[in-house]
Image (cartoon, rainbow, N blue to C red; front, side, top):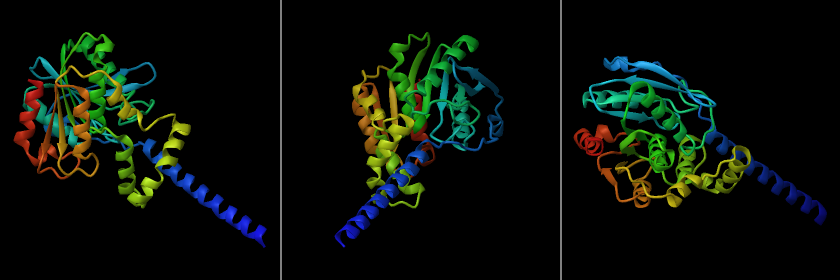
Length: 299
């Protein structure tokens, strides 16, 4: 009788462990499943002419738009995770920057939009997409000064680009970085997103953290703490940076943005948009304040 009970208990425990790791796998897979439908939007939708340029990299390709203007400074726009340069949010920013007189480059990161496939690392290796783009436009369009605007995933990648600038020995000046809603603690952000995008509750998503971290390392070779470690272990950033956060952001809380400021050097500044109540709505919440912040870092 005792033997039967022990077998039943062992079976139940085994089933629970199997369910736990199955759910952890689903969570881990969803983090790296970033395929999106390619959108047809373009700068022509806001009355702007552009040139579509594909940049060949060592193992992939980067799809870019070139929108020239009468400006010495060119702004490079970096979209968010699972986004693309044809997103309405990016088209809106292209129109804004063009009206302010800047020349523009917009890109699709690897694995996004019309670009090719490549290693996905939440911004750590994607800095190579940014440097490949800058090198190409330096050589082919004669660009000497560039500012980087990034949103969320693109914002964190923009900051990482700045942190590696001195190591790259690139013959181009990064005049400033405008990072809208960058993330610091990737695992915290991802856990919250799992709760928002799946039937799992926040408590369940928190419970699955150890399994998700383990399977992500085993399957994808990625450590969720590597983004935070990059901020904590690197040299200080010598490029002026404006960090933007929404007071109420369901994805990136202002606290994470403030933690980035504390770790990247004295040339960084955080601006909180008090009337901004969702991820990516800073411009909509206070247009004048947003433009003032842009011009502060890029002029």
